[in-house]
Image 1 (cartoon, helix red, strand yellow):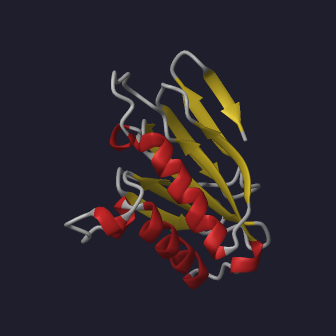
Image 2 (spheres, one colour):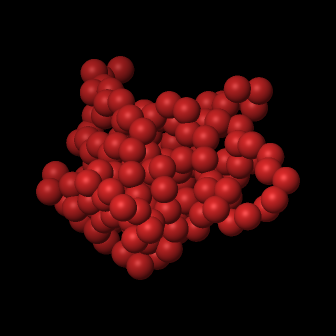
Length: 163
């Protein structure tokens, strides 16, 4: 097996890598992991998104925190490594509803709002979503591989799956 460059992506963080590489992020609860893959150049990008929109935030110094700004930056970082926007595909994981709330106020549904905002931004950029593992009430750890763009999803009590 070739020597893979493993890069950890923190919360409200994003990273990109050329092949051979693997990007991983731990503990996606209501956060969403947006995984992008250039199917030709095998360049990967992963964002660990905490909040749906920078427009409602006072402090927007960390653009990796928000779906609307993180995905744009992720695409630009991948293009700077040689990726082509026309060859990008997306996979989403996370966006869980980690806690039960008596009032179903929209503010509390941060997971589903993160997923919806990520989908909107990808749609605006013309990047197709080819797979997703979102929702539920459990956390996920994900690994994105550059050789074929597979996304490995590990969950406590739900095992491991690949999308």
